[in-house]
Length: 138
Image (cartoon, rainbow, N blue to C red):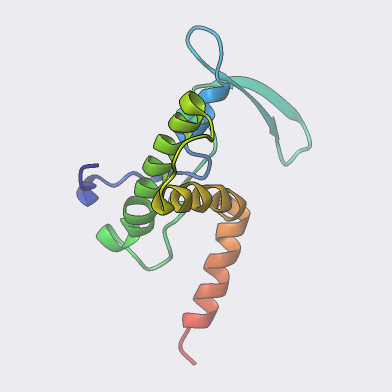
C-alpha cells in the first residue's frame, strides 16, 4: 500500500469503513438505505452511496492538532488497518475460513473486528475527553 499523502489528508473519517458497507449496497447505482432520527424526534429515510454513511468529519482528530499530527490516527493507523482487513474479508468471502492463516492475518482481522466496537463517534468522543483530561496540565 502506498504511503499516505498527509498534505491531502481526508477530513471525513469512516467509523464503518467503505469496504465493509459496500457489501450491503444494492440497486443500480449501488446504494444503501439510510434511516436517520433527527433531534426533533422525526425520522427520515434516504439513499446514500457506501462512502456517504458511517463517517464523521475529523472524527479522529484531537483538539490542538493540525496537519500531519491531526491526520496521524486516520492515515497511519485506521487506513492501513482497514486496508488489511479488506483483504482479509475478500479472502473470507472467496475461500472461507479454511486454509492456513498467518498470525499476522489473524491479528489484522481480529484488530478490525474489535475496532468496530470502539471506533464509533460516541466512543471516540469519550476517549478524546478522557485523554484530554489525563494530558491536561495540573
